[in-house]
Amino acid sequence: MKKIVIIDYGLGNLRSVSRGLEKAGASAVISSDPEAIAAADALVLPGVGAFRDGMEMLGPIEATVREQAGEVPVLGICLGMQMLMESSEEGGLRAGLGLVPGTVRRFPRVPEMKVPHMGWNTLSVPADEPLFDGVPDGSYVYFVHSYYASAPAEHTMTTTEYIHEFASSVKNGMVYGVQFHPEKSGETGLLILKNFIELD
Image 1 (cartoon, helix red, strand yellow):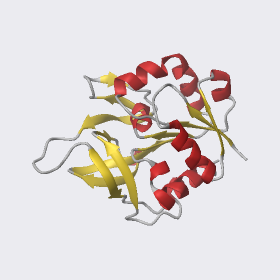
Image 2: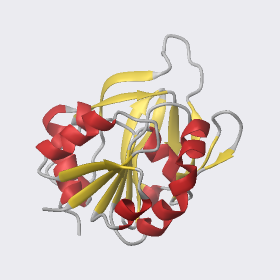
Image 3: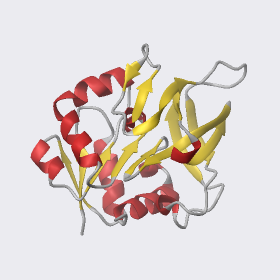
């Protein structure tokens, strides 16, 4: 069984993510210890809250996360996905981890469209992405976010429509990010987590 480390940097629904991974068949450990992170078979970077706070609180273990991103699969969830990107407009332009090309932008204001984007929405799923193996096109997942990732097409796995089309999941090598919450997305979310666990 793979040892998955959920990175604890002070933000994120850690227990919910841990339970989701365990249901999907992983041995999940929550840790902020650089040695544990370096010894993991895969890493999960969850997060809820502001981009600036996330990057500041990640501080002491940022270098370890960067190093491991080229060695083992990494999955960023919600704010964790946004932190994988090069930069974010939230709170002024701020640098992210730079592990996935692209920028995080705020949804524009549109009459009768609420921000944050909250609730169930669909994924446009391509046929050849291992993270979404067995996930039908149009599957519903659960979102809560006011900012979205603008990523090049070659780094976009799925797209979703809300106000406009945006990248609802991204990738770069072994680094993956999902804007939605798989741990809150029922059987579809569990399948995505299972697929992540099984990535080589």
